Length: 518
Image (cartoon, rainbow, N blue to C red; front, side):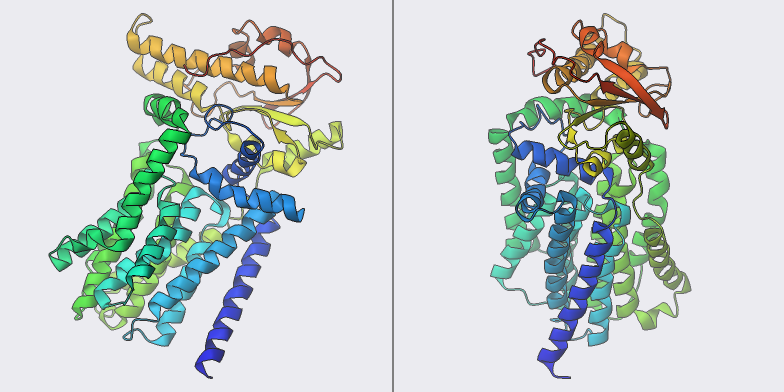
């Protein structure tokens, strides 16, 4: 087979695989976080103000990355989730082709090895994400993978021109800027390269300069265009957001096997110094990815996705370049074989499902066959009760909170600190709690939601282990009793109450709270 024909065959196979992946994800449900971001981006494009009308804890870049899919859906009259899947698969295609081209520049790597590693990259970007498809961690990995691979291959003499290094940095910046934690693997990999070369030069390669400069420009852009992010969201996050999550125990438990894999990569010997150095860079990048997961301290499964996806590539690369050495290291070989098998098995049995979307959509359609143009507000800390339900109904999102993180966080801190009622800390937390109450009532005043889903469990996720009732909580705002008088309970399901606004009920003439900060 001639070289041009071989390249054409590879591109056709890659295209077919990506089309298959796109069809798979487009015909299912996108996870609740991605579904929320699509709705939030649509509202933002319609004129809503970030960090006031949409209380997101992450910097604004994710909305800019979601915007092309939302705009594409409007111009092509396809659903926004489908457009988002197409957009993400197209970005993954660019990343995979770039990775393949980098691998092809290593003469010592046989063609079959390049194909196998490229297949591992495909699995990492398309198969392993499974129900985390479209999460910020997924976007990060898609754009950062060529940069990581370039770092790993540098000890083996991969030739990268300065212009391409700049492009690598610019492409990676899109993902690295999504969360500050994502910079850890880039820093760790660069520091190991510095140690190997006994020089600081790797820190000042064009790709790293683009990353550093781009990050500073982005921070200045956020401070200038979205000052509320630093004046409101960051202080709230530092004060209460740490109370939201599964806890340190879950983080530690999920980090045990990753630590073993990092140690195995770092201790895998080889007679070739360039290969040993590449494996050292790879283990440093893996340590950085695990560090990013640990530093977030939430324990949410999607946050470890970058590590799990890179683990597929790392194990494949380790087996290919040190196959002969693994005969004397059966434990290493076993680990490099069992980790990909476990991850692939988990992914193939982990298609996103949402019982709330199924049950609530059925019940709501029984109450009204058409929800297009109508709005829904969620009073819960479980955002998957509202998303992707709202997308499936074709309805609108009425609240500013995807889930009630401010209320839960403030109450949890109050319970944990057990501060005297007259203390400064307690007064600060009560002010935040009052802000959460007022802004929720503002959403009722301004948007008059047609349906309200209320978590009716006495003990709620991320709240203290004490009974809590959302309606009783909101009734402390003098505006709310008059608003709630126009709602009637229509049904209950899965420990949630479904309340509908009475048909032709007057929209409240009350005003909003008028204060944007706690």
